[in-house]
Image (tube, rainbow, N blue to C red):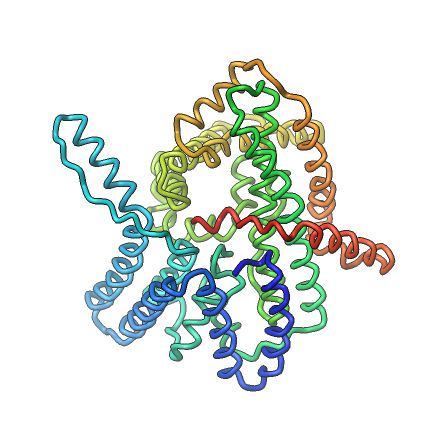
Length: 467
């Protein structure tokens, strides 16, 4: 089931009402939310529930065993059970074929005609998200950051909670589980904010992202006949598409959770208005950046082992972050490039290169970062590394060809999205429209609803469902 389907939008009010009516009985409220979450996830394919259930049972048991173990060696062994089971499932379903095919090609290049068998299995939706989320729980229990959850249904709800299950945000157990263990009664403010976030998230997805997607698809299909201006417009259009798609999903997730009396973390904070690549990664996919920092960068040594080691750690984190997105060299290159950008920025700061703070300088830096990020997104969108290199080559060599028509559409889409981003950035609040006077607010709601429900029939899937 998807957020941008009529079925979900018809069921959501009923789920909210039933959950609120059960708020006096937390156990029954959680059982109801767990049942709907499993229905929501199993609606695609009931077999996906088997893997989700295995993850829940293993990590629930491991955390209890870690907590009950007095021996450090025993605690480490149980932690390894969680690491191997979680990363093993993720590796088997997401990366085995990628590495097996690569190894077969490498062996063939040195004269060893060994062809490794491929699994060719369907990738379970959201496996990367719920694996990272569940793994963070066992690590937190191991490090003594939180006690284990005693009730299996509460832990199962933490992993499978439908608003964030498929594409995040990746919530840390110590932030979400305490909310789930107590009665969930949405306040009037949460209901208002939640309804607005659902509506605005649908607008970002259905109007911004899906419109931009048609432009991106056209440009990639006609890549070789397109001039460099159109290729550049296609790269910018994908920047708008992936932002509207993923930020839209995150806003809908936050909105649904608020309607249920639960607060999820903000996953995006106007990233395209950043003036440095470091700032961009503090504002883009914040939950993943936070997870990688807390559970990978810091354990690797972070900044504690000197400048060179910190730069190496950044590269490792970004390369693995790229690979987390998908089993394709395009994602590895995308992550590696962002790691390189971060290292260069760190080096510039270390050498005291003037950064500039004037308004004109900030605008120029913002445009430069947006262009750099947009060109790097090419590898994220391209189906293969050769296609990505050819696409970028067409831009850098000022390839001749057609460019009219679609470029203007990209400017129109950007013109719709940018004003709201600028206002919310300087207001410091993405819920700012809720403070507007009722006539203006009512007109905004009516316009958003008209645009959303006029285009919701297409139901393009969310990009991050594949991760």
